[in-house]
Amino acid sequence: MVTIRVSDKPFLQHDVKAFVLCLNENFNFDNELLQLEKQFFPGLRAIMEEQGFKGKVSDILVVPVSSNSTVVHLMFAGLGKRDHEGYIPVENYRRAVGHIIKALVKHKCLSVAMQLPSAELFGVKPDYLASQTSCISSMAAYHFDEFITNPTRKEQGDIVINLVTRNDFKEITKGIENGNTISHAVNTARHWVDLPPCNLTPVELAEKAKEIAHKQNLKVTIFNEDEVTQMGMGGLSAVARGSERECQFVIIEYNAAEKNVPTLGFVGKGITFDSGGLSLKTAQHMETMKEDMAGAASVLSAIHAIAVLKPAINVIAIAPLAENLPSDKSLKPGDIIQFYNGKTAEVKNTDAEGRLILADALAYAVKHYDLDALVDIATLTGSCMHALGPFFSGLLSQNESLVENIYEASRISGERVWRLPLDDDYKPAIKSDVADMCNIGKKQYFAGAITAAWFLNEFVDDVPWVHLDIAGTAYDVPDISYYGKGATGVGTRLLIELAMNWKAF
Image (tube, rainbow, N blue to C red):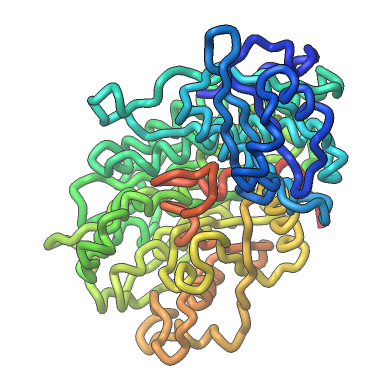
């Protein structure tokens, strides 16, 4: 856990175990660096040159020094070149903060003085930079260790950072609070995804969602499997019937205090374990399939943070939850199912189950709510993972204004997206001879991420809609310092910023 306190005390007057500075590439050795050299380590300039620290992106240097019979760590993190303004260098700062937190944990430095860089260097506002500091610090400190019994392998103690700044205290404190709210939502989503599937069934995830919603007095509706079947949600009920554990259909509603405001719908795929069903995955591909509810985790945790931050916008979060398992009751290739909106689909592969449960959720959303826009988010296709890898989520939509809103939320949050072409030429790929559509695209079309989006498009009517495929970005993302092994909570920050910065069209 990380606690951040705002401080206007001179940087070197803090009684702490570590002093932290973030430095641009080809920095000048002046100001705080000269003070650190004079007070703690006369050879600081020489050691920085000797270790090759130049302030490049991802550079990190830790210098332990003796001070008053104790060890103090001087830490420096690189920000890269100052040749951009805006959200590109902010991402460099995020990664610098991630490296700093990892170093503080490694060296067991629980009390820290850190200089908040000038927001002007990034072309952003100070409260935004403060929010990113607190958000990323908590994300970088996240560690899933509740099933580890060896105490030496657990995180040791809480880190307290004194964030030194000359900016307005009230403004910076508000930024820190906002960052804490966002990181709590992200880490909640990560924790749910990281839980073993035996500890997070559809019913248990629905209960966890209800608990956090009730903390903000949000309206929660949960339909059980019998109700789902009676309502005609043929996709969700078909996928769920292979498992003894009941499916759930969760709806959480945030209504702004203001009247006549836009309404956004968020729909997240919630397969709490995906074996592939009768179209069974290999053991290797099944190993991490507890992550197949990452979309649901992001929408359910995001709406909790939105309720705390209170934007002037209504948000509906919907999460269809099920397990996809093989049994004598399982959905079979060749089955035809009917969805909530009456459309039918031929099932050619039971491992393309995410779109089946999303179809019912999207159809329900557009029927029961007057939506200005609809976003679905899902670990949907290996195709998107192969196309974009672990650093960009796939974005598919035909609504340019909604896409611009998503791009802006992506820039602010740091969760990157890449647009794939939802072109009409791909639509025939899902045509079926025996039903309205089939649940997997014909082989000659390839482009599985695109054909999956065309399937979902059948259930959104005329509502502006965007599909986010997070198959590659939800789990085990390498090389980004504020992530570690396991879940990333991707989508949570983006959805929160989408609600906070919505531009009507």
